[in-house]
Length: 462
Image (cartoon, rainbow, N blue to C red; front, side):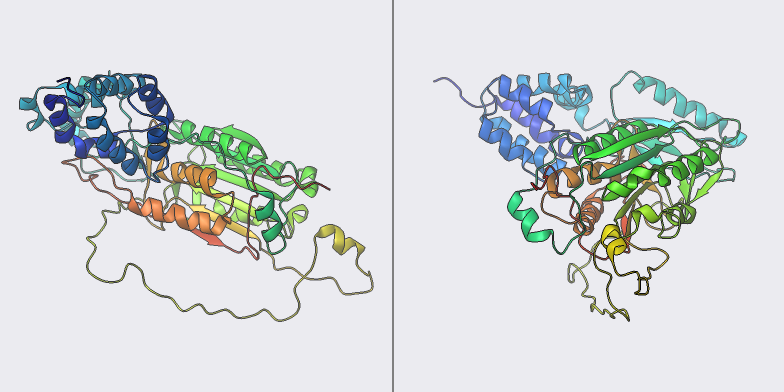
C-alpha cells in the first residue's frame, strides 16, 4: 500500500523542533507560495494559515498540516525554508537527533562597549560571533538609549524573534462603512489624505556620539512605514540620519508646507535612539518631543487646526529591560470607571473654511493650545524598546500589520489598543540569556476629539 503521509523520521523531526519552529519560523507569502507550487498546500489551506492573527499561530497551523500532506511535504518545506532565508531552521530539522538535546541555537551576538577588564570576555564573544557570521539569521536587539556610563558587565545583542513585516495590501473601506461613520468622525476624504514625514536615524557619528550604536533594522522600519502610509494615500517623505538640528529644520519646513491647507491630516514618525521625552540626532544631541508636538499645535501650525495629527515614536524611553512577571489567577483586566466632564461653552462646528464664512460679528471660537493629536510610543516610560536587526522593531511591525488589516473599519485609537495587545503577547527568544522571554509594552496618548478613521482606498463621489 502506498504511504500517503509523511515518513516517521520526518514527523519526529517536526515534533522535536515544534517549540523552536513556532517561535522562529516566519510564515510569509513567499513560503506559502512555495508550498503551493509543490502541491503541498491547497489554496484553502494557505488562506486559513495566513488568516491567523499572529506569527506563532500561523506557524502552529502549518505544522499541524504538514505531516498529513504526503511523503514529499518535508523536503518541500525544507526547500521553502531555504528560499525564504531560513536556512538555520532547515539545518535544525535535518541535523541528527543525537545533537538536538545538546545544542542551544543562539541566532546572533553582538557585544556592546565594555571596560578594559572585560577584554577577555569580549574576545570570547567575538569568536562566537565569527562562528555564526555567515548565517542569514535575524539579529534583533534592544533599542539602546545612550547610557553615558561605563558598562560593568558583559552586555550583548541577541536574536529575539523572527517575525517579519507583512505585505498584505491595505484592506479597503466600503462605501457603506464610510457613509455610516463619516458624520461622527474627523473629515478624511482628501486625496492625498495628508503628508507623512518619516525621520529615521540608523547610523550615528562615531566621534560625536560614541555611545550610540548603529540601529540595524531601522532601515526596514522606515521602508515599512513608507509603504503602508503610501497605500493609505499619504504623500510620504523619508529622511535618514539627521543631526538634532537637521531634524528641527526638517520638522519646521514640514509644518510650514502650505499644502496642509488642502488635506485632512498629517503623520510624523520618529525612529532613533532615545530617552524619556527626547530622541537622538546622529550627532548625539537630543531633540525634545515636547518641541515637536508644540510645532504642530494650534498656534504654530494653524493650517492643521481641527485636523488629526498622528505621531509614532520608535525609540527607547529608558534603559530598563522589562523582564515580565508571571500571571496569577484573577480577572484578565481591571475595570476602570469612565468619568467624563463636559467642557464649558459650545463645540465649534465645521472646518476652517466654514469658520471663515461665519458671521464676522461673532466672537471667534477659541481652541486650546494643543489638541487633535495622537501619539504611539514603542515602550513605556523608563523602558527599552525591542528591534529585530533584519525585520525591524516590534512596535513598527505590529503597527504595520494592524493598519493594513484593521484600518478599513477601525478607528486609530482602537487600532493602537490592538497594537498594545499584540506587543503584550510578544516575548524575546534567547535561551540561557537575560534577554530570554523579555517583554515590551507600547502605549499611546491622545487628545483626539472625534473618531479617527482613515477610510482607506475610498474616495467620495461628488
